Structures are given as C-alpha cells and as structure tokens.
Amino acid sequence: DADVTQTPRNRITKTGKRIMLECSQTKGHDRMYWYRQDPGLGLQLIYYSFDVKDINKGEISDGYSVSRQAQAKFSLSLESAIPNQTALYFCATSDRGGQPQHFGDGTRLSIL
Amino acid sequence: GQNIDQPTEMTATEGAIVQINCTYQTSGFNGLFWYQQHAGEAPTFLSYNVLDGLEEKGRFSSFLSRSKGYSYLLLKELQMKDSASYLCAVRGAGSYQLTFGKGTKLSVIP
Image 1: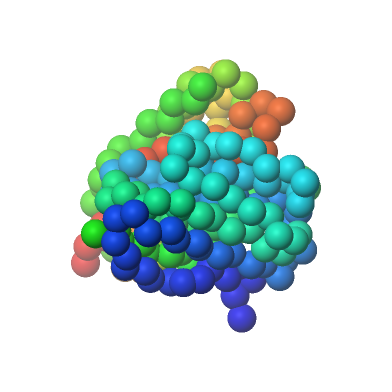
Image 2: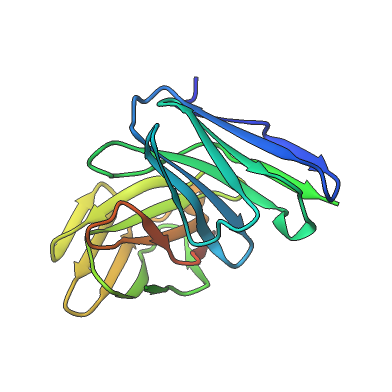
C-alpha cells in the first residue's frame, strides 16, 4: 500500500463546481503539502501544514482552501472550480526534519 | 524569493554519462534536493546536498557549490528507464518549504 494516498486519481468536472481532493498518509509525518503541476511550470506550492493547528499559504493559494482533519489527513478544496485550475495535483509529506518530501501519486483534475 | 534554472530538455545515449545542471538565486539556503519524475507519476527523491561537495549514490551523484549557487546531478551508465524529468528544488533558510525548478526532461536513446 502507498504511504501517501490521494483520492480521487482522476476527476473531470464543470466550471463552478466545488471539488475536494483528499490526501492521507501512513508515514507518521507531521508536515503535509499540496502542490499543483502544470506543463512547463514545475511544481508550485499551494498550501502547507506543519501540524493539525498550523496551516500556511503557499505561493499560489488564491482559489483554494485546505483542511487538516488529523495528523494523517490533509484535504484541498476548490470552492468554485475554473478551467485554469486544470492541472496535476500532488500531496506530499515530510518529517520534522523536513527532508525529503514524499509524494502521493497525484490527482489529475480537468475542469471544463 | 527564489529563482531556479535548469535546462528544459537533454538527450543522451544509453550507457553514457549525463550531467544536469541547476543554478539558483535565493534569499537564504538550507539544502538542495534532486527528484526524478516519470511522466504522469509522482516525483521520487534522489539526493540531498546541504554542504559543498559531491554526494554519491550508486549510478547517481549530486554536487553542490553554495558560493556559486550551483548544483549538478550526474547519471552514469545510463539506462532507458532513466528517461524522465529531473527536478531541482531548493529549501530556503529557516523554512521547510521547497521551491522547485521547472525540471529537465531527459531522453535516453539507444
């Protein structure tokens, strides 16, 4: 079983819909991250959390929100999806030393 | 802020050696990571440098020069399965966030 599990793996939805992407981990790590990846742009940090009570914005947080429901769970929401949020989304975790980050298999999200 | 540059694409021959360069400008530095990412898959950790010098791990080595803001990843005895994107990522001082470069797509040809 994967240490970092993302659901769903693929999602196609329409503009204006609310979407939730979920991430769970069995690594026992405190730190969790959400990234998006677009062709030619690399990985960009959306939000990160150092523990259940600590949530921080990354470089591209507009249009997104997160919830850290437990140490092992970190969800990303798009309140009203728009087409330019079509991307590959990755969840990652790391321990308190911060290295290295371990990635889930990704969610491919398409917004029509 | 952070700025990370690496070549967009490279091609190399099976069995050969290839060097992928990464230069960075940062407001602080607390380590450099290399990840491998096959198309459509998750990035996987390859190496970590925080001090100057060479770190070797089997066919893969990574070098860091902090004074020059420069790193490279060296892949020896290339195999077809090494065809992937290689991501350079820098961690800023006092931070656990990573800033990623756009990645170098390596194609290994017979």
